Image (cartoon, rainbow, N blue to C red):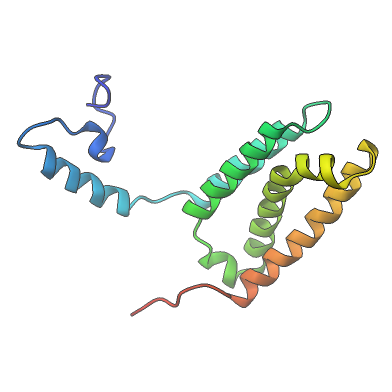
Length: 152
């Protein structure tokens, strides 16, 4: 039972009760968490939607938008399986584009406050930053630097 709201499936140790069965339930939850499958396209689409909804607000960039971008980067890096992007050019371009947008969202306020001379320069700076980050991510994914080889 999740917070007394009923059975919402196996959410790991969140639903474990104190007492004799809690250890077995915790171990079962850990196994379920380890085998969790995340829809890769949905993950990138959700990140893209969050970037677009955050960046479409009028006015200057705010520090909170950096926090949103940083959290989205953490989520994508934690749950996205980059092995497909290493082998497939279209997937590499899609992943690189979304990651570059997330980095731009995370860096928009510092660019506005510390780099741009005028607020009108920010869109051009962010566009240039996106191009550089897109190329960097695409190159990183194509070279496979930092990826562990599967043991088999």
